Length: 74
Image: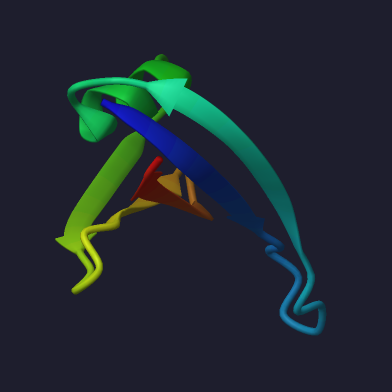
């Protein structure tokens, strides 16, 4: 399946609310496996949720750095 993916990397500084945002298109049958392949070799814990519009959100803690991947069907 083809998805538009928004990857947000949150800043660790408590006073800075900015985050890096990357947008891409990917084709995958398993969004969680896709995220795990991007973060391979790092200490990662993930949570997966599905929004009412069908988008899949994967929140990842990558060695203490929070990242969010939102997969919207293309």
